[in-house]
Length: 289
Image (cartoon, rainbow, N blue to C red; front, top):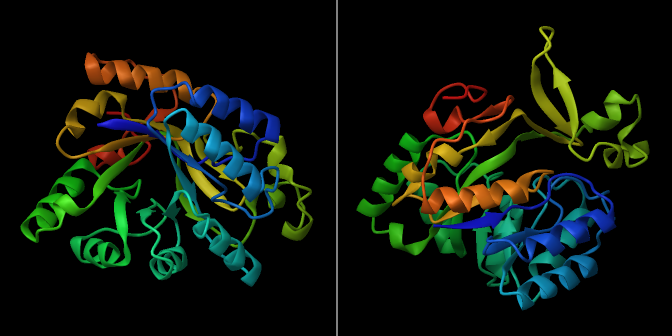
């Protein structure tokens, strides 16, 4: 197993993005995903900026994957996605079936991102024909589901044709909407959001009436209210998972070091409040088992 840093899900100033990836270049992550997956209005980093960053990371030995938007809402976004796929030097992460088709047409190998609902061997087989080289398990699936799916892939002679990646740290992306929840919370129209997400570098929390943090609102994306953390489940991934993904957040790089240590010397880590691992255990996602 090795580790990846998934795409940055939040909207950070350009200087903060560059500083984060400067540190990431010295981390134990072998694969780093770059790009905007949530909202096309987030333009602190343009494609040329991401490509400059990709080259810098590649020069340090990192494998770079460019991630596409998870929700395409206009012809201009489709055209921009095509530019990402035709980048010429990086594999792409397809987070939309339109991206899968464009990658297939351009003969660009791709990672199936967690936003694509791929739950069984039939869909795996279809994506392999389109050029998939890695499948990222949807965040709501469990270890038992993964075991059964990979067994079915083995029986069909598919298992050795793709890598398996699992989202193991961060606030999980659960859903996408044409509405912008952050703008709505500030009583602004989506078209006049004034780039409100810049004010919330860790998203905008949404609590229940009982005061429990249920969701994190991140523009058009709804995330889990609790931070997913599978560090104690890392030994269970042996033989099933090839790449363990950590999502960029404030504490991610320090947790990445802990994950690496856990891989070499497993111990039980008491987890902080508001962390969870329920989906992996096939129970309610907010639970910590």
